[in-house]
Length: 342
Ligand code: ATP
Ligand code: MG
Ligand code: FE
Image 1 (cartoon, rainbow, N blue to C red):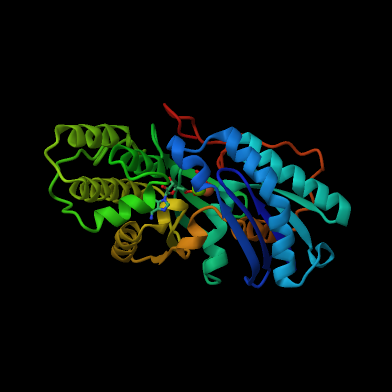
Image 2: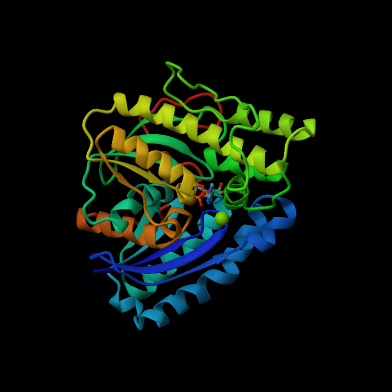
């Protein structure tokens, strides 16, 4: 089986062809960083327009690179949410048109499920159930993954997502957009003990995450003029990691047996975050799995892979009138918390 994956939920336009035996035959990603950089964040209208201009040629390029046509594909999988609705609609409508023209099934994929299953694309030995720390631009959650489509959320953020905290820290320090990689680079030159910063909810009975107070403290530290930017970046990153370790440890204790601790989503590309979680997994006697960094940030291979996982489970194609969803929680049973967390 080969699946064409399409991703357009934020500011990366991406297409990929992936096989059921985990080969990425071809992939392409067009980042829009330069279009959004002047605004310091993703502008939805600019993003939707850029997806519309770039997606069709990108899909053509990926098929050419692999020497394949749509007839060679078993299905077309596209992100149907959650995300910026204009961009999601561009990807989903394109997928519908291709599915109709080629008489192939359409699979409307949850972007978060793409992140959640991406470690299984990277690692053929990763079995369910596993503990997943999903840390991305819009989410910070711990989930128990029992199977494809079976997610139980144990913790979520009550305010900012972790990637959002990195991006805001970058903005405060004038590092530009996108911020995560820039903060990581600068942190490598700083002293993580130089700036006293809070660790929100550390040790708390509450299962969740919080990063808003940390971000505000970063702003105050910067405005005080007392600290080097590199020291702020390093201290921020360490505080964020301490929070993640504490909160993930708590979630693991409530989760039951799992085969592995897995991290996914854009922030999982961060080397210090990966190293800290690897250490945590070792101390809990479980395997640690993190996809290669290029599979952590938004990409279409993970969407194609999620499609393959669903095909394997016997899911038929979705109706061609399936709707794009701006919000789409992985665990619909989870109780909503204060703030943005879903
Ligand atoms: P979501 O998946 O929640 O809908 P998204 O798709 O916008 O959000 P991703 O592409 O998964 O998010 O991740 C992007 C986020 O990851 C950004 O906030 C970015 O700053 C962060 N990020 C990327 N690389 C790194 C890094 N090396 N260190 C820290 N953060 C990083
Ligand atoms: Mg991006
Ligand atoms: Fe994402």
